[in-house]
Image (tube, rainbow, N blue to C red; front, side, top):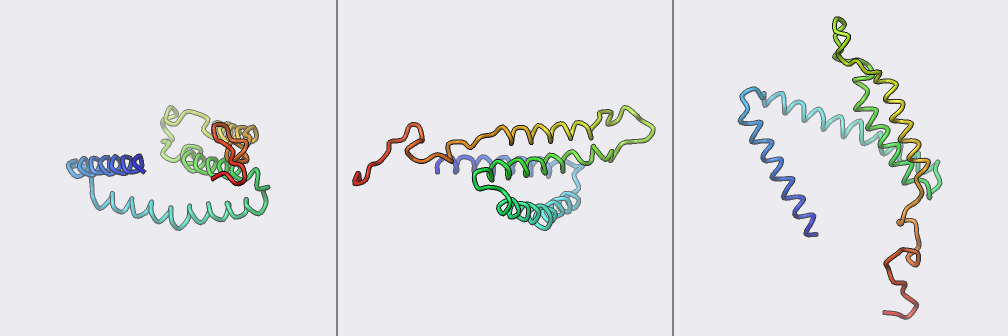
Length: 147
């Protein structure tokens, strides 16, 4: 619990520093920042989370319990990577008269990264969380009657 308190305190201090820096910057438009944050909150709560929950429910029904954690982690990772890369893949912000802007083959690279996520998921074996208590290294096994 002590580490949690330290992390919460550090997070509050960092956020305070960011807010103070933004408040002191004359180029920051507070109304624009607040509308952006409200939009992010709405997209997260109305689109992203319901989609994650729906896909998680589908995975729970379709995937064996032993494989679920890896499949869920790979699916969420792939979705997040796709959401971040999609503007580059679609070429948003690419001026027609400047071929050096966004010059990489982002579609191909996205496919390669997603294939890497799938490969890691396929190679991943269930870790210590799937072991019985008697199989966990470093822990003593309690016999019946030991208290």
